[in-house]
Image (cartoon, rainbow, N blue to C red):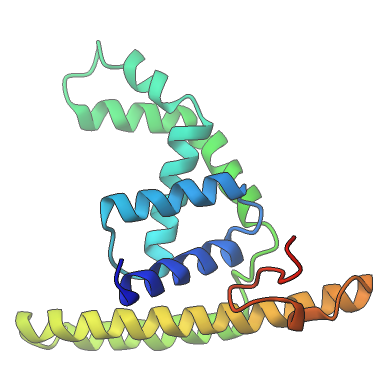
Length: 185
């Protein structure tokens, strides 16, 4: 894996850790493997959301069995998927809410980052297709970097407060660049 691909993988792992703090470690590892297998590209929030949603649906619900059940009566695969998704929707959404509990979803700084890039993505639509594609790649990279930086700053402040209250560590100084404990835990 080249350096750029490893950096994207690290950013995605970091993003999943921050925005899905209650996601089981095995699930996060499975999602990262799926990211590599499918060679997914794009904005971190979109990629993470797709991975989390698909993983929740396929692994933690009976979606697959529902899909097989409805196959007899539905002629189109789109109809089968829609019916199976509807059948597990409540369980799926509750699981995603559980995984996201405690995440900085509504943090003001995150809102600023999202608004800034939303405006910049809109501006791209005014360019010709070739220029749009080139600039979009650069913009996605820039946005992913901004989100990863936000996550790092949020995590350091978040852990610092937790550690000060618990007295269990020196805070962010005990964490590596990915927010993991350097004490081996």
